[in-house]
Image (tube, rainbow, N blue to C red; front, side, top):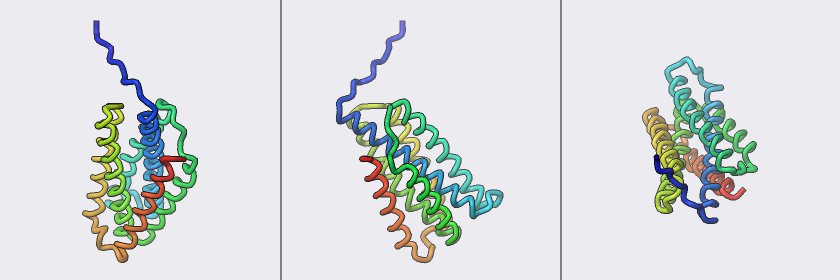
Length: 185
């Protein structure tokens, strides 16, 4: 007879951490899909460049779907900022695409740098607490995908964008702010 693994009973701190991770990542992955939707509204998805954006968008859609499932299975309330983050993501995608291909990729580099770091912090905390091994695997896998997107942006000369430092810092600050707010609300 197979031995049934028992899930570790979560204490209140662990429950809070899981809720924060799922809520923030759910919002972030939806925001990422919106950024790429905005960029694809400007760039033709049938061009080589558009196909690369579409490929990243499809990966983000997989991430979004997983966090849609987790928001239900973990019984987590989505952030109340969800509608705003979706709108802001789309506007960021359109806005950077209107500035050109390099600016669109600068957006990707900035966002994915923050998200890669954020996923790494989450993975370390889950590993340290020895909770939710499936969530840990998900976070680590998605982190790798995000870092691939980051590298794609760099390959497309994101850092050659006029005003790159200011654009990058602004987008990163927006991401940090969205994460902080989404953790709580």
